[in-house]
Length: 136
Image 1 (cartoon, rainbow, N blue to C red):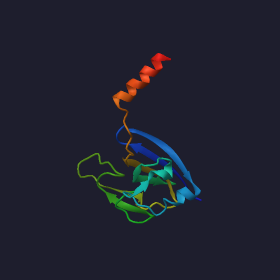
Image 2 (cartoon, helix red, strand yellow):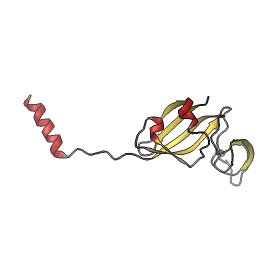
Image 3 (cartoon, rainbow, N blue to C red):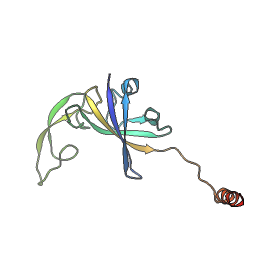
Image 4 (tube, one colour):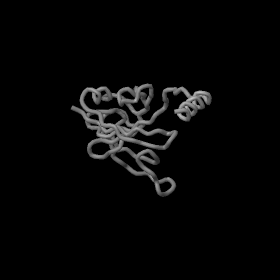
């Protein structure tokens, strides 16, 4: 039975938090790829739409969007993600996990791309509430 640690980040506020998914909810993510969108109700965020941005497997190898499939491969990288060169032109062979979520994945990174619309309080409603509190 898969268990995923989902790291949800909000680009507007710059904050991130962790949600743990187990059993049936976690099975819904198996087979999804980096870049796909998922519904927020899976993570108790109704009305939100989330995009999968990456993750890491049970041994800490990061997921790479250019590597197809759910397996590990050694690839030659010249830039991010998964490798940040220190010198111009530097390349390095690194082991990375493919872009498909499998049972070997432990952590999945997602970002919020759409939030539900909230009704804003009008100034009149706010003034009425302050008057009611002042009368009591």
